[in-house]
Length: 390
Image (cartoon, rainbow, N blue to C red; front, side):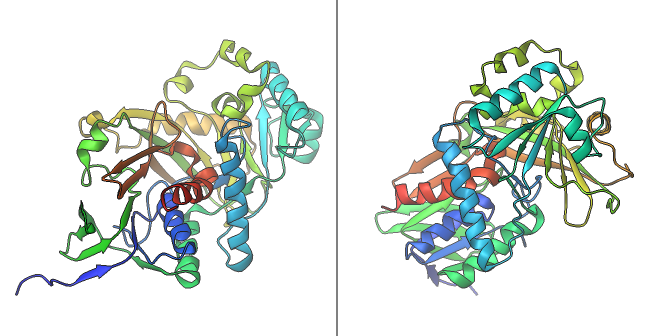
């Protein structure tokens, strides 16, 4: 018996149900299009689920289009949260300076952006009073931003999909491994590994790190790199409450918003532990809803052509030891037992904030948003849909 000749039709097909894919589907459906959202796994399980679940303004440059995307994304999350619990909580963020230079940068930022970033500088004595879990020897001051949000990455995307499929004209098909996308004057044809066929006027390929199957020649020439991150989670900590997302002194240098401070350039002159620098380590900590504390992370970059020749899929115990030591220098937790360790992966472009590439005016590759997907993904997705589906 041959394969069925039946072709399922839609206006828009989105391949990949991470944050980018799900919100591209959501905003296309909000414009009145019939949308098919195809996901290769039983549930989304890539970078959109293997992260800290922090939604922050400071992750991108100030006064930029991407800064606006952080605000738009926050509003989008909160609007959906009012109708359906997708795990969004406005808990704020707390940057901890560990040197005098970092302290100066945080003070400058608070003085310059107190109103637009809803933030204040906190002296170390006040930090100790408010946050007894912070190591006194580590902290020289802190920046508290109260409008930043937290999310639960293991449930967020699936809950958004559940909401979107009920509220809009989206059909979600998990366990659908797309193996071919072609275009013609009549539209786009999509085939999956089971031989099923789907057609649409436009296709969005938001497949994250899965670049080997669809348009590998485009990805090979794209300049994209694969970033590997290592993270871990402690056992639940019922005796302690981390009320905000916690970020280290090294995070100040890593996140672009602080580059607008006059003393930011002095961070380049700070001595940094060679091992931390080698593995791109800074420290983030966020308490999950079960009381465990997520810790990380490291950053190792590989060119696409080197991925198959490298041990990128393995977890380095040495890096985990560095992460744990950093966390213990910064925080005082009652129980440092680790219950889970994992790797995360995302695509990033060294020169572009996101990688987009259109084929035949109908197939749109969207990936490489880097580590800012949770903070900016919904806002960028709405912008991209409005740009393409005018």
